Length: 405
Image 1 (cartoon, helix red, strand yellow):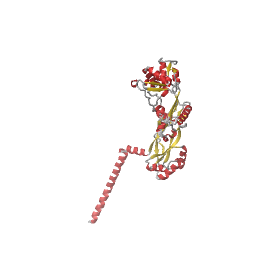
Image 2: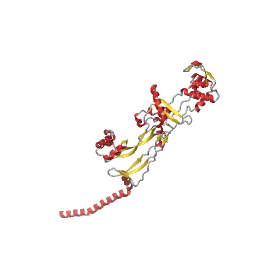
Image 3: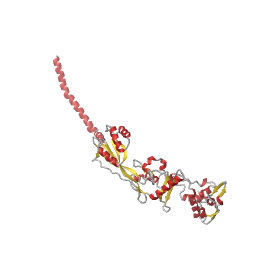
Image 4: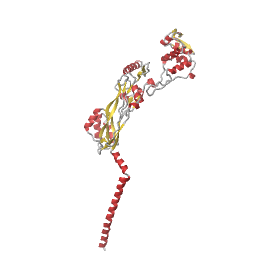
């Protein structure tokens, strides 16, 4: 009886074995079909992504020159060190070796490697000699990307006009910011293949789209005048213990700016070491009273409208004029001055007397014609308009002080 039962079990097992194998094969075929047919594109894309890296090709930023072709801003070849943090097993060893050739702190490099995910940037815009040293080390999973470092050969000269470019190749201030879209160019794209050891090579299936370099820019600035203007400005600020100052040199015929600066200044090669206030070109960003220079505007209006001639006389009250409860003074005592000499000697009293008689509408209109109360349209960011008080807000005393600034 037992023998018969044993034979039955064996027979059943023999019958089930091919059936089981058939079922296993059937499941494998279904799985294969699911992978190869139903989700084929998904798995292909996933595999390609694991072995493909899209690399942005940085364009060369345009150079900046002064009106005579003197170089004010250019690009110095450099490298950015990259590493595959996931593949590096000994972050301490690799970080320390990289720090020794870059001059960076070892603990910072090690921390970046340990915290990183995939390919990361370890050191930006390193000198080209670092590239040679890196190639000699032949470290696995460590490479470099050719980069450009923005340099300003004249240092602080013209810095507030030129501005600076940031580490990402974007303009940060001045001309670099205003004309950023022209200077920065258009980036390209290269699709790279990754090997099992995370090495990169060009993909034969994806042609490289090369970067388009930025346009060069020529300014109206004359570097020679700019240098002199800044030296004299800084000297005057020091001599008078002033908080700051501004200087502008303009071609009176064309309106071109030949030099423009404010104090304190900065060096764009190390702009991050300075306060934001030192980047500012106060000549266009700050409001200030024109002072006695406005006498030119007032007198031009009076002569142009025929209100007065150069030889007409004005009594200047011998240095002090009491009017409308106020006292207007000159630095020296003058009696009768011609209209011309009122300007030559910058007599506040003479201009105030002329202003009291001159038509308010004409005075205001000529101030507008000279550009007061509005932006000049200079091709730099940050310019603000001055304040030109509306005639409706004038008092009886306003025309007097308006005339001499």
